[in-house]
Image (cartoon, rainbow, N blue to C red):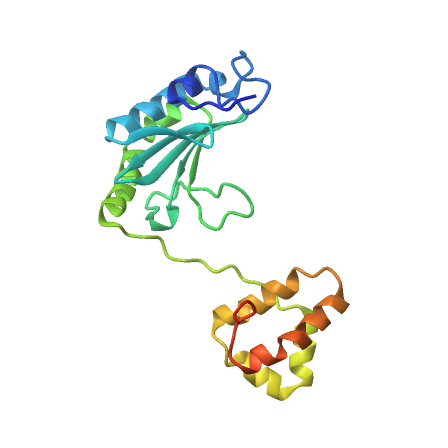
Amino acid sequence: MAMITEPDDFFTKGCGRCGRFATPDCSARQWTEGLDQLRRICLGMGLQETVKWAHPNYMFAGRNIALITAFRDDFRLTFMNAGLLEDTECVLERQGPNSRTPGVIRFTSAGKVAGMKPVIRAYLQQLMGHADAGTKPPKIHAEIPMPDELGDALDADPDLSEAFYALTPGRQRSYMFNLSQAKKPATRIARIEKFRDKIFAGKGAIER
């Protein structure tokens, strides 16, 4: 099934990503009034309406600002680059358990959209200001646990330990990430031995 490419299709038929497309059971059709309200708010702010990932996407100054989506249990407005937002009203939620930054408002009625219109407009205005200024969200580095084999190797070799901890945090993470991709302990141990010279040279795992 082909996904939609025109915004109007989403509001009348759905996203085209499942067999419920253009049927009364489509999630987009279940939340028609609320979705239309979100659309009017975004367009009323002067945002450019496009389609990305088979959903209505709203842009300003060449940057993605917000995305409208619909599910069986709710419909949502997802703010892009949410790390730049000041959630003054404490209304943002995480998209899922692995999301790093809260950036979603979930709705279960058109009435909630109407009640939150001032907040939605204020948050959109925040992101539009950042887009206009070219501000980028702060980088968030995911914590990578140190593999046991690397910890054991560092404990057993003070020189290796000193060299490893003298590396930049990014280079340390490169080794931990590389080793964490190996499924077998023996593979991780073998990689550590191959990495020794690079660690002493002050290099990261993928540096030559």
